[in-house]
Image (spheres, rainbow, N blue to C red):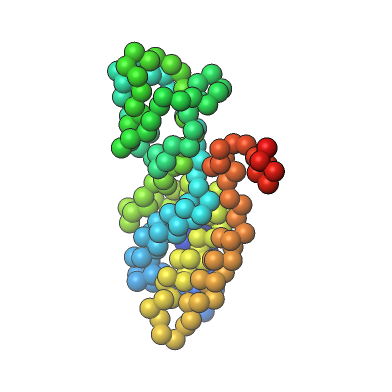
Length: 183
């Protein structure tokens, strides 16, 4: 889903139509839309993380910058096997000087910030199912200051649809361990 499609869905939820059936432009609603979508996307990404993988080749210096969108490193693999001796600190990968290994890094990505200047063709970075939750959140935020219309219905729909999102299984250690009998 794109930002423009999300905005259209919010206006449909808010019933912002003229008597002729065209969507009307409300400056107050439009001015807040991008910021509310930014908050919504970050909230959904905290619930259902954006998991990415990047391949890197170390240069032997002992420090290498991680991609800007890294929120948390999940695992580092060398030759397909989980590797020890690597640490992510303040956006940098720290390793032993002289190491020139090829690594695969799995990480949780932070979505790009949606600003008032973000174009409507921006594609949300969360999954399509997660993006379908966003208009409910934005509609609720648009109505929260309205004393006549209750925002609670849209906010509850947002919470319900978000709760149905599958959580990523890539965040665990990668294996299932039987712990009841200590095996």
